[in-house]
Amino acid sequence: MKIYKIAIVGAGPAGYFAAQALQNLATEEISFTIDMIERLPTPWGLVRSGVAPDHPKIKSVSKVFEKVATTDGFRLFANVEMGSDVTVEQLKERYDAVVIATGSAIGKKLGIPGEDLPGSISAARFVPWYNAHPDFKDEAINLNTEQAVVIGAGNVAMDVGRMLALEPSELDPTDTADHAISALKASAIRNVVISARRGAEDAAFTAPELRELPKLEHTNVIINRKDIDDAFARVGDSIEKETKSNLDAMALIADKEATSHDRTLTFQFLSTPIEIKGNGKVEEVIFKRTGSDKTFSIKCGLVITAIGYEAASLEGIPYEKGRVVNVDGYVADNLYVVGWAKRGPSGVIGTNKSDAADVMNLLISKLDQPKGKGDVTEIISHNKVVTQLHWQSINDAEIAAGEPLGKPRRKAVSREELLNLGAL
Image 1: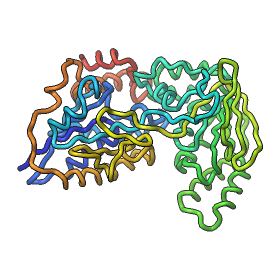
Image 2 (image 1 turned 180 degrees about the vertical axis):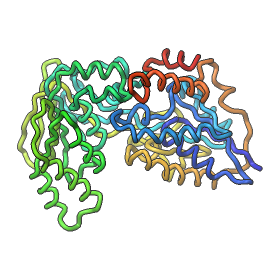
Image 3 (image 1 turned 90 degrees about the vertical axis):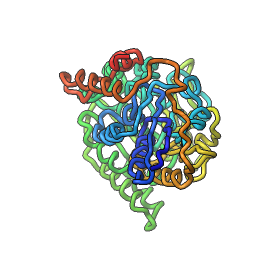
Image 4 (image 1 turned 120 degrees about the vertical axis):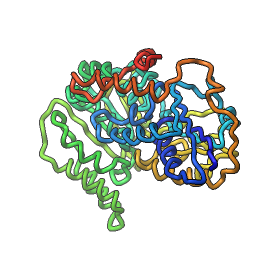
């Protein structure tokens, strides 16, 4: 029996699906011990700090992660920072293979004047703020404005728009961060515009997400029927199934009987942002009608961009265009990459499963004799490592704290609080 040591850097969906694939590929001839290394004191990545809290069904995939984590041969090393606590080179020396699964956490920029004004932020800061990510708990989000603009045409933009436009009491039974619920309840925002550069047919929203919008009980959701008709006309008979499903979902919103709530979420298409204006803070966004010279503006005090993500670089790994340079997941030597760090921020959580399985098959095909040269425990010098047992204590405490409030959990936000809950 050959036993191979694999290190996975990143405890998000891609990392867990890679570990699951290895566990499933074990045979009587080969098996794997898996050490998963995570920068935060908590695992699960975007399932914990990215998925909108009012969509709890998506978070149920965490049950899969927990099954992976409690399988023999798996160890969690959370609260371990790559670079300062351990390097990629140190892992490569000690493990038969190292898998990078760090995702993409840096928001892409528009590259237009005024983008750095106070009141202009990336969804990469806003989403983890309301999801209780320790690094973003002190973000200053200006909600003291009647109108906000969200720039982007994917599900992240839709999540951000919805979180700003819904009645905040709808978040009471969710695991939204306490500080975010308080801030949203005090928010002056009543109108939110989601703005897409291209037409409705090119939007990257998914139909299930769109179909959820009319269920908002206290928010008017507005899509112009002409935008949908024009989109159908542009694609013609060659329309793809997914595009048709999207446009049909948007048409249902456009045709829905008008409501008269205090809060409104409006979609606009074919609108390219060219400048953000304001005297010391965001006051207005200037748009150009895509494909024409016509411009128009929207007054607002908050702009959130959701136009994609890039991977944060790690020393010793080649990056290009916001992702790790790779060929089908293979980087070099005994180094591999999966998930968003491999292919860029695309697909849904489940997309990472088949992606990881393909890369792990490739990894196994390249394995030689096991090295057996130690592991990460020889390298980490501090005593605040969050193991699976520590995480279980944190998890149980959060769930217990949420129960009397009717929440799935009440998240601890600061690193100190998380480590205390883990008895560290």
